[in-house]
Image 1 (cartoon, rainbow, N blue to C red):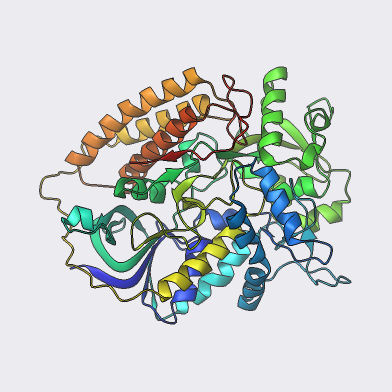
Image 2 (spheres, rainbow, N blue to C red):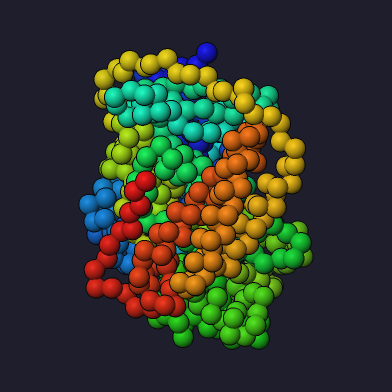
Length: 524
């Protein structure tokens, strides 16, 4: 028996929660999340939300900064559409009760920081844990709302479309989802389905993303027939904590925005020789500079030094970074922070229009899962949560204007011809192999040969994983691996099609930039 909703949202980051709260007064909403409600990447966002809020800032300036970072590939209309709605989005969050860091004496009563690529202070934040504060504020409203049914510990398997049902249309009518607690597959039906599952950082060995970032929505949308664009543009955050006995931990862009300096182990500053904006250059430039210096000098890491700032300033502005580093024996008020680049953000994804609609009627994609045209070849710092808010609201408005749709009966998941897996170690071995060769061959600097090697290995893994999927009952690990391998293929195929170096895609075989900026679009 299918579980029926008016709207089914797969993913519980800021995009999904924003959408759910804007729909729930008038629609019955199902909200699917792989683990618990706040385990996604939005909760990990440190820096803040970029919006034009100060009197000396302008919409045109924010648009210009976004386009410069995006290396000529940002859609001008989309960029203006998003940025013009920034102030209203912040007002909505303040109205929800988000405790943004305040600053007395200013016309605008909140502290605004500056990050790489921005020409003004325009990033509103909650100390250095903005995402966590925003998500925690919205969580209570989500859990308390009678029209929102929360399905935690559920992972989407595949979308159900008219084409799969043998109907004349190809509308999306629902999805199959695995309840990872009971190991039961549920059929979820809705007139509108929204993919908001985040990005695919876990396709790489080193990432700032949580374990849930396995490209699920991108892979599900692709298998259903959506076009996917610009997947070669994987943003590597320049400054991730390097520590032998700790998981990767993001060191916020705002540390450099507030004066942090990148240095070699001997104390030499190196960013001015790479870009006139030095530490405030966009992320792709800073990440490549660090990668260059590490390889040139044979280093495991470089250092980010903010010790020249007063200790109280550091503790006030970066309390969580200070505490985390202190627990690992690093006092950032007196010692530089060892950092390395790490996979951080998926700029490409499912192609959507300005309302979040995909190629398939009834199917939307918002947040990091989507490719809206805002980020181009490189996302500007703190534009990600802004995009989540704008498109969560835009998709909600469009869905509320839709006419009622008659839903067909959906078939139950068929497990009659599969058995329990005999050797699950195959999954862990394939997972490890994928992440390692993606890091080695499809990382910050790429070559044709490396991409060919990666694609060859991906095809071998796909054959093995597809055979496993056909013969054994699905598990969370199998589904995530299946989606990661699919996402990896899309990244490599997109990279092979781009015969230039632009933004986040740097190729030794094509080091120059072509005169015309074009999107890389894959069609199934």
